[in-house]
Length: 279
Image (cartoon, rainbow, N blue to C red):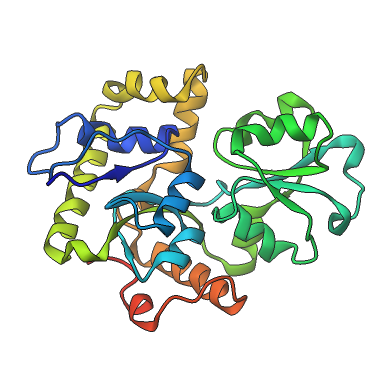
């Protein structure tokens, strides 16, 4: 029976998965036709164990570790790539604890970083990530946490950065910021999970080898995004950590999960913690 698969419409994911979903990866398990979905939708679906293999925010992973295991391929980690807290210039002097802040989903890594950075900021409101900058510009919210391609364009809209939450994390922990990963249902079994992991890694390697082949597919879901922004997005979020997190990446992920537990954000079982990543 084909496996169900979910990933986001963002260029980093469509770049990674292009060859896999187009049948260009040898010895790949059968998957149903995926329909890219916003990462918060994928996070919520994971709470229902709806998909066999799915992109997740690391924040959401902490909530579903008993049911899902992280794969070693396909992750988004790095330096200088974290979410930004932005506001209109006229509101930049407002105390943060009094601000109404739009966040891109309850279970996104951005939401958790904001919570860790500013625990006194209680007025947070969930919006689709694409709606946050317009909502701040229109004055519906005092500030917003932006992700994805918004970090390349916010200044064009007259917004200013109050805090780079990724840089805050890096300075606090010394680790790269863990944004998202690909996870598989533990019930699939270790042999199939390893095969899935290998297929995603091969899809990524083939994308690096022939990057232009996936561009029409990427543009289909990226809408009218400028091609240079698309390429900047991929360069920022698809890197060596995407092929394998290595010791540096695993240390960052472990620190993120442990901080979530220390702050009572989630509480996975000890068994799940001991097998955080498929090997």
